[in-house]
Length: 189
Image (cartoon, rainbow, N blue to C red; front, side, top):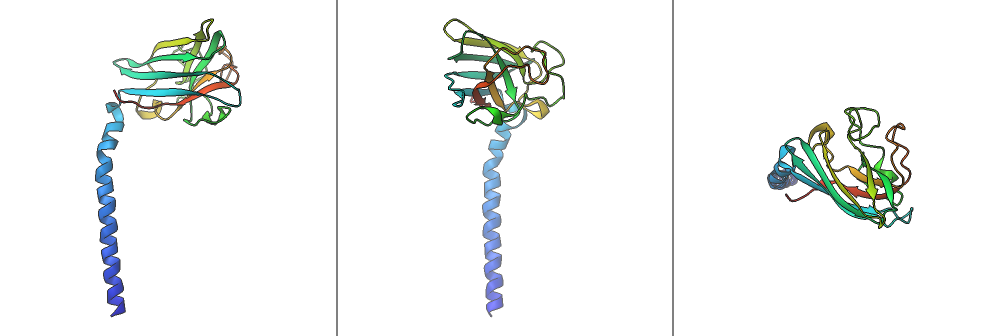
């Protein structure tokens, strides 16, 4: 009798677990469809200053899908006047010095170069230029970034650097410390 009771309890437990997992899968299905592939049309990165550099850099950068790729637009403040390297990095992780973001996002194994170069890291966006008040506006179109596949920038890090990117030094342009980091996430269209 105790063995039959144990088997019955195990069978009921298995059915309950299977039902819960099945419902969980059904509930997640619309979310997967919404986030996967071409249904994502907009992403955003909220730049947060790194604390180890005592940075005051902050801003919001949006990435919008277009017929030819991705349009990047943003407003960034708290910079020193002049040029600053601006890149998508491998990992979407913020930490006090920004180093947890890894290197430039480079799924194709291309050399580091200017944004306009046909052979470059997917994450190479060149430099942004801050005015005398420390404000910069980003407004560029990119044909190498995407929201799906191996060149997807979703979940990656966005970094504003301390110095100008020289656009030639390998592997990353000698742009110095990381002043602010954002995690690029799906945004409501």
